[in-house]
Length: 117
Length: 410
Image 1: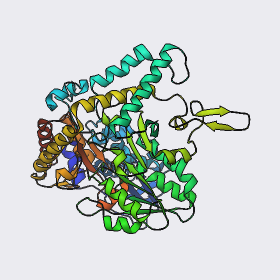
Image 2: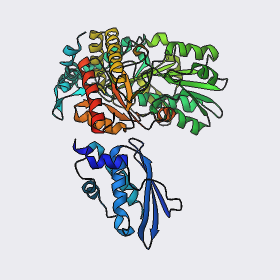
Image 3: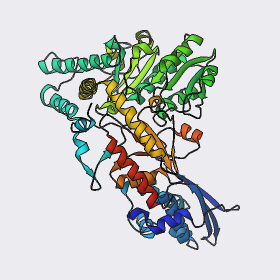
Image 4: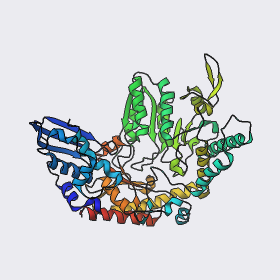
């Protein structure tokens, strides 16, 4: 089925930037109250840019894959631009369709990242 | 009983989901409604609708008779002689909150202990936790054993001279475990006769014969929408002398006996606790649900669910990497099977099952303390009712195999 394309399953099995930054400048935790899934994002910030980003957490394939893909895409981005990332952007990044009931899962990482400001 | 024939009474089970005939395995969340219930509600609005207990006109008299008739039916259904002990509320959650607010705020003081189990639904956990916080009480949580049954030794130990109230589930909404609520009530009262025993029967009353009069508890709660009735109507049962000693939880119309400038007095039971216009159509619908269940027979429903549960557990446990929670013996559990597939998140399992037309619940099932205790974040849950068939179980098994295929796990 469309939601579980090869790329999503690949990110689920081998999430990119998975781990902790010990001396992070910023740590943001985000919980999905519906299911208890959570992600924790760690940021190193240099010259108002994302110098390094990692995340940990536990969740479904959709939330882990979207966190993984998002983390790849925000490295070296200006902090000020992160608040402008929309749900639609995330859906484009992860490609394919996400069932309405699963949008919360897809946006969990985004909600964390947008808290950076 | 013929579940195939019963299915035809439920219009919604005719529909297709994602191009496939729906298999509804989420009755522990809410049951579907037979046309007999839907029609009674519709007919009530078409023919008899009026406010209850205050009109002299014909419609009001009819509506009152139907509303109070439903109360009598519900009382008989659960073995309660005095129908005035049946309080209509919104759902089991409201019933538990009513006890916590009315009885609890009055009777729990600093150092008093409240005992619950780790496997409670949030609705039988958080009201007590918050009551303990507000009134300086102590919440004690009894563990379960590896087979999903209550740790009775720890349960007995948890009850002390300071215990004021004990609340536990009749059937677990996650593990399916059936508590012997009669024996547990006896254990509590033998050790501490004045302790109040509350039983959460939300997952029991829809699925098995429950005789509240014989349990020996002090309060028993359940909800209508899980037993073929509409949403918005639930039941609090309490012993008359307890209910009479409790202050009202809400104030307004219906619950009043006399109102003066500076004081008011309260109506008799059960209306003292039914402030405002009640869910008349809901109660009437619940009465129709009780008629339907009585026609099929609760013993037959229970027998059917044991068969389905046994079949499902046997089939699912043959699939590699499927973990099933709760008692192995279908006779010791309600029609609930919670499971996980490998390390796949329950939401992903439920999404793929939905794609196959199979509706299951996934997540923490409003039982986070239990999930923490089991060491899992989430689980998928298939729950059964009188309209489910072995064919439905086969579709579930096929769906689980599909999950493994999509996620490429062996």
